[in-house]
Length: 169
Image 1 (cartoon, rainbow, N blue to C red):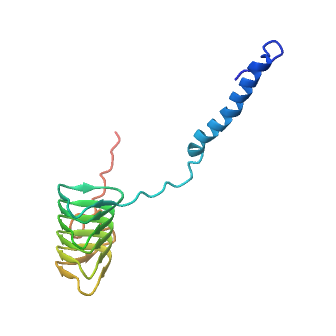
Image 2: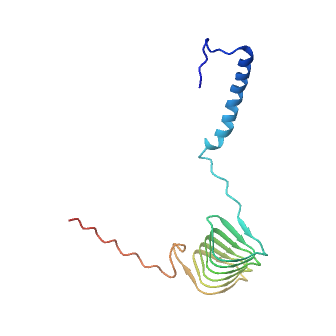
């Protein structure tokens, strides 16, 4: 900030204090700049949200992260990774990149990867890219494979009509 010159040179006592301030300043700058100076460092993935067994939710849930349902949800769920616990019940549509069902789902399941474990109870259609159903799982509904099960709405989505050409006059 300031350049030292012989005219403005501080006395011995004042100079010692300035040197201490100068020493402390780079350290404080280094500690505050370190996190922001490394933007390429990937953020740590947050832990999955857990809805405990004694919790009942009425309403839709939407997250870009992972969620582990242990209680009861009456509503649609959208997540990155959705795990329905062994004692859990979901009454609604489940949409996630990865869906693991250990408990009960009454409603449609949509996922890139869907896995029904041996304790799963599913009453509803499953739309998936890949699926695994373990021996012992109870499933009542239809199974349909789609390349992009997350974006299409029920059944095979019709191809969009071409955009009309713009006329210039």
